[in-house]
Length: 469
Image (cartoon, rainbow, N blue to C red):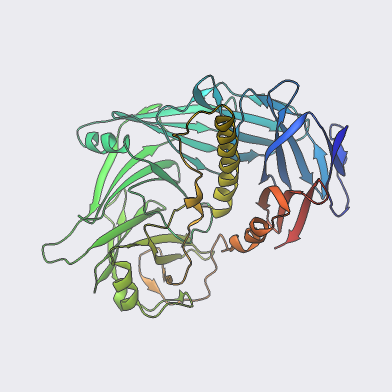
């Protein structure tokens, strides 16, 4: 007996590749117990969709990949894990999809890169990468940057595919020793400049990919300083630390909080007090320094709930709030600086809300499986609870924007279009979360479409739904 999973799609022209196995429905044998799904984009409006299921015969966890290409479904070759995997990230290079996965081998967690050939369907799996000292993962279009840290060094693995892995190590010196010791004991949030970022991080440590460097920053809001460690990716495997401290308070300053953001070799630092607000811009590798009194500027854009910059500064400096600042480049070479504040007890940053939703759903299903196993085995659970806090995000009632040119001067232009357009992905995903008739849902945003795969409990089938943005 087989479980029928029908995929409903519109039928258009399809490029005939002899190695492709086009189907309009998917039959999965009853030996499979579906654990989760995952979706992502490949090229243009094409996408991939993974069904992760436990194989009752082998006891392995099989990943069954499908390609949505030219509005047709293509089945690729299955690959397996001993323990249930979680998809951490992915990237694309021409006709190759590289998946970064996390799974257990024995009692240890490892990362693997799985290269899937989108023409032949064949796959290649990397050697195990131990997750000891793992800190963050920064996703780029054609690679992923895996960040590790111990008390004496930072290590970056630049993963282009399963066989192309470069390791760059920065060891501590007198200037960075304290920074690295603190970094090793704290979590790091990854920042990606390759998309529109509406709200920034409020974490103490942040990792940026900026040009050909990874930059890790540390915020000291009491002193209004930002420490920055720059790690070049285009030099030797062993590189020297490039460590600097930016900002600081004057003696008569009433600054209460500060935060920062990295963009195109510059550090943008926002400082606020109850009645003052200042944006300082520092060159990371030169003497560039400019300052803007934000109380004197006129916003080029603001939220519906925005009242005034004076009111913004007053509320952002309150004890339970934290200010955020982000930079988004425009198509005509200018910069949109976006200011906001969030409730620090509720807010949890991630640079891509859709991406984090995917990760969250996998983690939810993973923890449910672990809890069920523990209950069956009557073992008390002392592990982490389900990570529901990841759904607390900013409501965008208070933000405002100003526009700067590359010299740091204010430009009063409301019509500058961002390189990466803003898309409120939550409005597309929320109805799926609220639909109790669906499960095993995962979503993807392509150039022009919103697409998702979901199991329909009524029809006992999987559907792929494609909608124009």
